[in-house]
Length: 224
Image 1: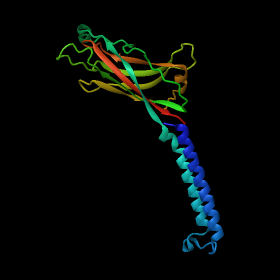
Image 2: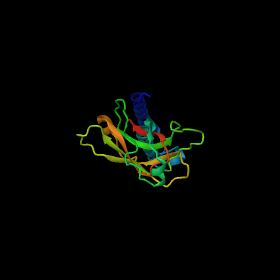
Image 3: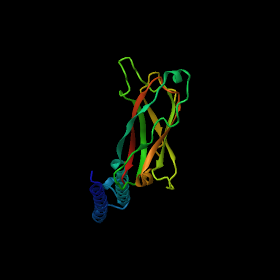
Image 4: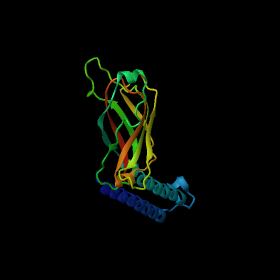
């Protein structure tokens, strides 16, 4: 999408609308033969025409200010598949899951000049890689909570580690995917410029056997 062209069109539309309003107001005022307060009886007096001009200004402003929402778009980033190691004995003993079960997720964006970028959603889902036979039915019931943070790649960066999304159980039995509630008010543009990773902290118990998991993060980009 050519944002520059779209903005130019919006600007031209704004200027054209305002100029037309001025011209119509000027011509109607010169050609008006009725008294100043004739109102609707003679097709609209000066006060009616001023109201029309004001409405033209408001419409043009709303059209231009609404462009940002129209031009916003989503970017989807896949989370590389990973395996959560399982153990039947540890599972039955309710051994706690390691907090770093989900490895760091490094997501690279191409250079962009956006006004703001926020997280829209994060989800994780079971894959078939670690299904050993037809009777093996992996799920995500071993998880009690997942929190995703954003952190700069450079440890010397002054950007803080910030929570982006959170999920807390319980979930339905046999659930094979989970969606995290995203904090959409966190602006990520500085992290994208410097480079960032997504870190996940989990709680739960060790699964009965190995479970392969993948995921997806969705970002909302507002270019203007």
